[in-house]
Amino acid sequence: MDELIIVNNSPNSDKFKCRLTTPSGVVHCDRDQGSPITLHGYLPHFAQYIHESGLFESLINECPIKYKSNNAPAVKDVLGTIILSILSGHTRYCHASSLYGDATAAELLGLNKIVSHDSLTRGLDKVEAKEVDKWLHSSYRKMYEPLLTTPYILDLDPTVKVLYGHQEGAKVGYNPSKQGRRSHCYHTFFIASLRLVLDVEIHPGNETAGLYSHQRLWSLLDDMPLQCRPSLIRGDIAFGTDGTMVGCEERNLNFLFKLRQSKKIKQLLLSLETPENDWRDAGDGWSGIESEIKLSGWNEKRRVVVLRRQHTRKNQKIELPEETTQLELPLVFVDDGNYPEYEYQVLVTNTSYSIMTLAQLYRDRGDCENNFDELKNQWGWGGFNAQKLKRTQAMASLVALVYNWWNIFCRLAESDRHMEAKTSRPLFQNIIGRMTKTGGSRTIYLSAMGAEAEKTLLKFNKISEFISGLGSTATQLTKESKWVLILREAFKKFYQSDEIKMASSGNQLLLAL
Image (cartoon, rainbow, N blue to C red):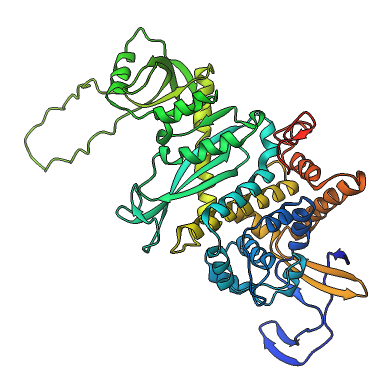
């Protein structure tokens, strides 16, 4: 393989054929045909990252897309174009046309060419949904399983995606923002705090209840080695059902869910509002008390934690009286006994954590909404709609996979914070690359834009030096071992250096990464 050298400056062309008058004066310009350029100047570093970790190679080798025609594009070209389109923030297949002619970007990813958007859709339509699920599930596990050897929280949450057509699975369901509009429901599993997606499954818009994700959830957990299972499963009202809790109890998993305020729950709340009950501080303005309850359909009592927060009911609007000459006496308003009022949350759990801890754990669950906001508005979950549900599912999984890759890559540059795409793209992708070839070597000159251009290039050099150092320090390291070291560096804020490791039992690797 030819040696690739990266230089952080750009040569100037000496050719002048056009004389242009601009507000700044006369400008001479000419087309430079000598050195191809790319608008994706970050790709050399990102390509090194996915190559040395084995992520890209594994995704290509296990892909079920097969072509028989000699004129068909290569599978690697199709997947490489999809990845580049997702990284660029595209939301429609036709947006890939903006990548046409970028031979430098294709060369950096090892592609023959950037293919058309028709090739993308035809390629994803060629395989069955079960084959795609198996393929992408394997790619997900290779990415996240070393992280699961440490204690973590599994967040469960569905989100609604509004549709404007008659796609397969488009149904009218729960949709508070656009009532009556057809939608899909994305049932998603996250690693809490790390903001990484473990899996996503698309259902029709009228299947928002947590029970519709049970099959996928239990399959995901049952496939995990015991030491990779979560220390806590967390969800909102959609998962506060007996079926979800029984499934967790059968697998000896801790859970924390929110209960609906049914008739029996309201009776419990009324019984707890007595002077002799000891409400404890639960933080952030909340107070809490614990109890036990057995609802209809439950086989046994379960521990519940009731949280309440005081708020004052708004007074009704009082209109000014009309002008009158009659003497009026001042009115004295008597408290009707309804002040103050309380807002309640009822949590059910099988853990022994304190009220303060459980209240904080459930408040932290709200970070899922930030994940959905980023995936739907800054990545491709808000688009890539198709008539066939299997292609929509495939693209949603691929978007989440590339989202995970990119977030870990950005963590290598700045490990102390998560950067959303609206921050990381302007910072890391506003780079132009110009490639030159001399003999058997290739050199790419990078020109970064923005206020922090120099810092960006220094961060890229930091990533490159770290990944290159993995092979020079220990040449016998496999790509699986390199990936573990990359994860340790990316998430060193959360874990000790030796906590992240490959999941193994004795000398046998449970999952070939």
